[in-house]
Amino acid sequence: MMEGARVVWFSRGSVPAKIDEWTFQSPTDELVYRTVPFPKSWARQMGVDFTHSTEWRGPEESHRVAHYIQWSSENPAVLTVRGHQPEICLEGAGFELQGGPLFQNFRVGESNYEFRRYQFVRQDTDVIVYFGVWSSDGRKGALREGSSVYRRERLMRAWRGEGNQGRRLIEVGFWDTSLEAADCEMAAFVRRTIHPVHRQPSNGATYATR
Picture 1 (cartoon, rainbow, N blue to C red):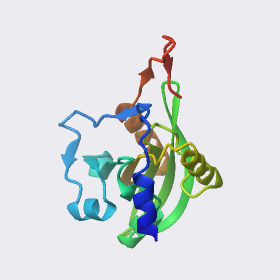
Picture 2 (cartoon, rainbow, N blue to C red; picture 1 turned 135 degrees about the vertical axis):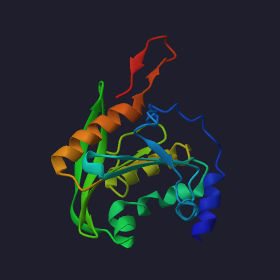
Picture 3 (cartoon, helix red, strand yellow; picture 1 turned 180 degrees about the vertical axis):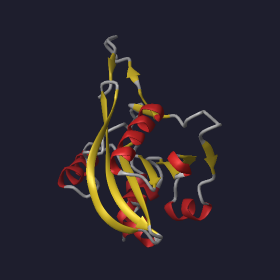
Picture 4 (spheres, rainbow, N blue to C red; picture 1 turned 120 degrees about the vertical axis):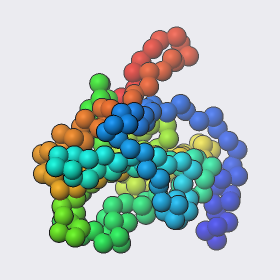
């Protein structure tokens, strides 16, 4: 039944997709940041279309890692994104949840980007994780997966014949650091990697996305 519903949903007439309201650009300083492969077994399990992972070192050589993951609107696996959250995936990998999620905004120019902040412990080491999910047209994480607003939005999109939306996910982990230091590092990382897109509406006016 569920598989049949997916086939029907993704075979609906297509509607032109909106342009992304922001782009992700990995840090380019190779002396500091290093591109690392995203585990193939994770990619297969999650059914992703695109991934990019970066790691670097913080104070006293403490570990940092960031994952950018993307699902297209035509990918049936986009319906499973709700299951790829830190309190599910990381606890299954041996991380013990100590606090969170706390919803936190990071500002880039005139735009705010919402993440959830978690506190974990793994092998006696504190790990602070920031996690954000957006639809592929740039809607903020305020449309939280599973919320009544999110479910209503899904129903309205079906009613309008727009089909499903793609999803984008950013997860960043900071090992062996304080909350205050992690917040500062995360703010700098967001400013470095997330770039709001200015659009050209049909009436000729220009505006920045929010």
